[in-house]
Image (tube, rainbow, N blue to C red; front, side, top):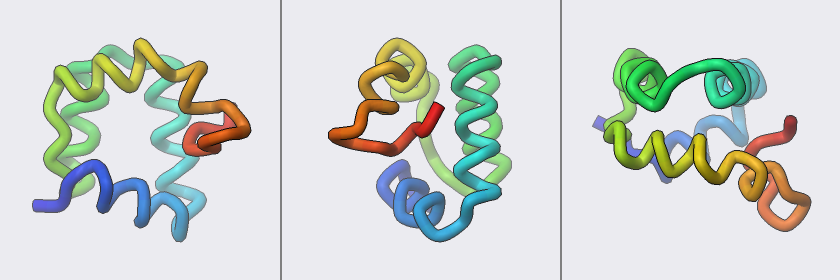
Length: 69
């Protein structure tokens, strides 16, 4: 199974995947996001998803640009 780094690379190549991720970060719990990653074939644990949600503003910064909204 792929990991979060693989997801970042795949999302950079697939805007639909990136858009789905953005939607989940805005509207979902860390449990739901972890399940979504699993459905997509990525092994991203709930504690990592909680970090993503807790830091979504930093992830959307121009410096990193992983999360555009």
